[in-house]
Length: 138
Image (cartoon, rainbow, N blue to C red; front, side):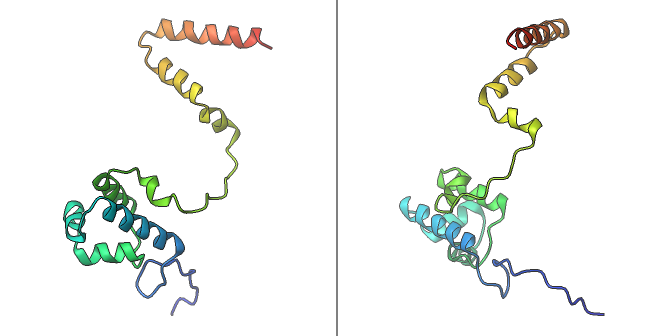
């Protein structure tokens, strides 16, 4: 029996139209390659793909995987986020309460420093100090 359910067209595959994200990422890829004066052949060789595959990525006809995007970022000396800079920001999702405090850089620094303490007795002392300070600030 044939499956009658269809998933929505996502683009970037055979017979599917490219999505705006695929097109934008491809355009940014082409822009950076040209800015650096690299030919299609040079960049394709650097990341280990064919010239025609790179052309498909640059046109948005083929979707770029995360690992390939990272390889392009390394070869083109940019961060992976560079390829998304022309896109509107995604809708922010609410951060679960326990994770909200971990978005604070100072909290991360404290956690990292705490993890660097090797002595269990020193860890307990640091923890006791923080608890005492938190209690006295209420």
